[in-house]
Length: 129
Image: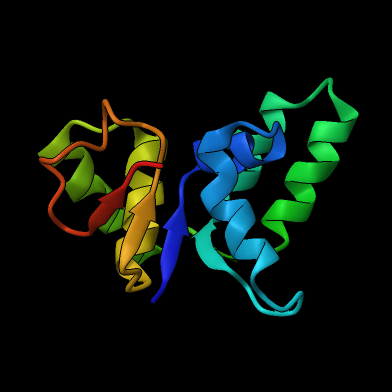
């Protein structure tokens, strides 16, 4: 099963918020050289700006991001993101994260964002930790 992660889950994992436990558990249960899931390279932009002034959290986020297979925003991803943005009224970063997951063939998209990623999203299984 391929699992994609949203930025909020990465941030929660780095700051020891319980909502990040799903990602930390996957990291703990896997070999260090095997990615535990996927995400967009946009995760770096979102996650690292949150901890800009907190060195320890920033280092934890970099280590966590290193355990994911981070995929680029390609033209195909951008086209899918545009459709998702229009259909579900998502912000561009949210649409890009979701489109990355869908385009990569992920089975689940894990996010703490219940407001934007509710039951109306049917293109992929949404998991809220």
